[in-house]
Length: 190
Image (cartoon, rainbow, N blue to C red; front, top):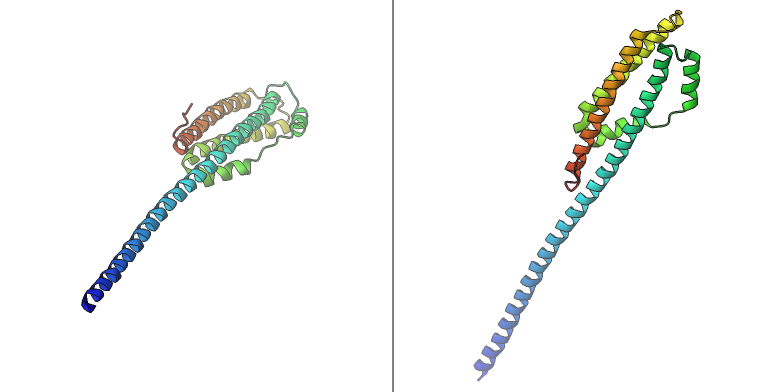
């Protein structure tokens, strides 16, 4: 009889141990599953936040490019009017000072370099055209100081550069729009 009680107790103890081990195993599996789900959710949230930051920076960059390009063309067109005799250089300088162009070109170039390196080539083309327009304006300024008040040659060259600049701006904005479709595939490009 003691043996039957011992066997009965042993079954209860073994049953309890097996039940406990199964409960521990079930808890561990549930915990592992919950951790996996939490990890996936955190990865998704981080990716969403990253896309949102990129989208925000992209919108800012697009706006800065538009503003900067408009200011640059306006600035050079003022001096093109001097080249064709519509304004004196002093009048152009007064207009330039009065316009007080705002815009942060440094921010534009920083955002482009940090967040959108794949658009660097198109941005470099814009910089080159900006520099070419400045060289033409500077060359005309030197001649103007020597008494040559008009220059159709400088005017044509500057207009050509500004037309190419406007085309390059559109290409850069298209590159940004393409980048936007990569950041957010639900967005369509122009």
